Length: 196
Image 1 (cartoon, one colour):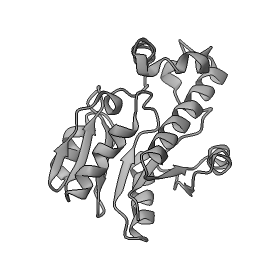
Image 2: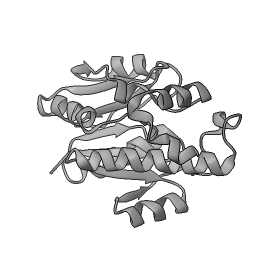
Image 3: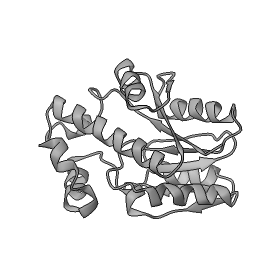
């Protein structure tokens, strides 16, 4: 079985509130959906199984329509969404990776680099540019601690951690500055059509 890549996704319309100065609600919803689609399609192109975990019916319908399996999120935050995905992966004895849904520069090589660490029985972990955790993988349950400065908490909790510093894994879209940085990068130019 390929590794299961757990992609928690909030409501497209409720997410990205910190971008409200740069984009209206419809623009933020288009951006959130496009980013989630980019991440899931990139995972699939790397030969792994994307699993959308969401508490939102619209997101679940979008995932099904796009051909991505989805799992109901208990709705208690990112940590619980990640735990649900890990339990699903464990039911098929698959290794897992939790990956953020808002990584505009993510490439198939980034995803494969995470999976290669799992192949070596390591725990891949990638920091986001703001000190969070954009990706973490493993084989067994983990006490997730997403949020501000989560990278160091996850690093301390991981067995045999292997840290991956990669641009495609580091830049997530949380603010207008992040969006500008992505648009200025050659790999993020595709966002121009999304935000108009």
